[in-house]
Figure (spheres, helix red, strand yellow):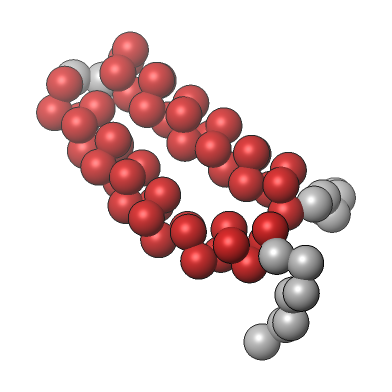
Length: 63
């Protein structure tokens, strides 16, 4: 079941998932794999900025 939530909650959930990915990778996987996961998380943070700005805006227009 999909439950709609606010943009702020959406962003916080994504950040929680990304943090869990990095922490779990550091604890469980070898160092090189944890570094790769960290690079993927950094890439995700960079590419999500535009979407997060849109989620936080009060004047959202759908494309």
